[in-house]
Length: 266
Image (tube, rainbow, N blue to C red; front, side, top):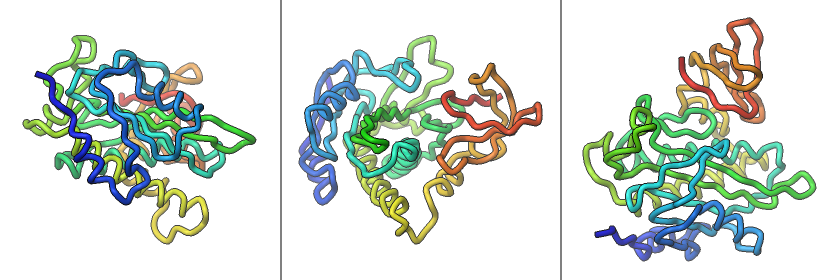
């Protein structure tokens, strides 16, 4: 029997946040990001959330497909309308990665790593990811749709990803409530967006996003990686630039900035 999603519990836990009263649940959809993008074009408000038990056409960064097992994962998209320049758009993905890391720890006690810019790992295996899609007007964001997929209670995966994927259940040895993971994610994301707004407005007193991301991800400094863009190269990661893009000190002595591709450990 399919697990019933307890929307009332989620709504109660989100009172007082920008997401209060704005969570919409679906049994099956093609893609929660597609629903959120359509809603954004139709004028939906900042803070609308779309969560599904199953996706038939979920996707990740670079148009990669995302395995969406019914009732086992968290498949959610959030519509935000932040006041920020398009040059800072990558910060949305980095902040969401931090929020997801916080949520996983709060809901399960597990420590997830963040593979720049948007993969969630436990050990060497991927347990989730972030996909941010934006619309721009006059150099500023009109809106951002933040898609997050987290493998929560998966016990197995298709053969082609079995060796590289994992779930919160596999890593902890017990089942977890998707509602709890969603609530922790949205609470953490609400806080991250407030901090991001303060930082972009020059009002932040503590550590900035790039510093916090660098401390939270083992991939930002001194990780030996291969990068596929630019014909492909290898080297050591060397921090983030001011926009949040990853720098890699190549084995050929050239310091490069990763703009569109991901990185993989070697």
